[in-house]
Length: 215
Image (cartoon, rainbow, N blue to C red):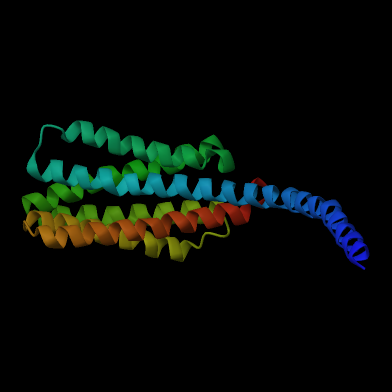
């Protein structure tokens, strides 16, 4: 009886050793493919988040430099404008060089107009502030329209709302900085950072949906 029990146990173990590796191998073949797709999507998400977070970090640095007339203003502006080229380059693999250059151009305009808005607010020139603020929002409309035409998964209205909020939060930072209200400035920046991640993720999802074979 004891020998029979041993034989049955060994037989069961033999089946386990034969079939378990096959099961593991099958799983091993399925998971890398799924993991690879996930990694590609995450890489795009991480890249766009970093670029847009850099966007608000260097915009913040420029606001500080411009309002305080610091010596590094030109260098900070150059770095900020480079960020707009970097964002344009991020869409090049999907939309080509012409679209990449167009987005970079629109974003550079966004920054240059922002500089005029900051200067008008700093000098207290309400007429110029209204003028350049209107141009700023018109530029946001242009960016939203350009992107929504490039990708049907990007809603023109949704992008406009996101960009308008971005402008409002930047305006809040400028206002708080001029009033020397550090607490309000910090709150506005933190909100701006959270918001820009939402914008970056909307762009990421749109690209993945439009080009599923790349992910």
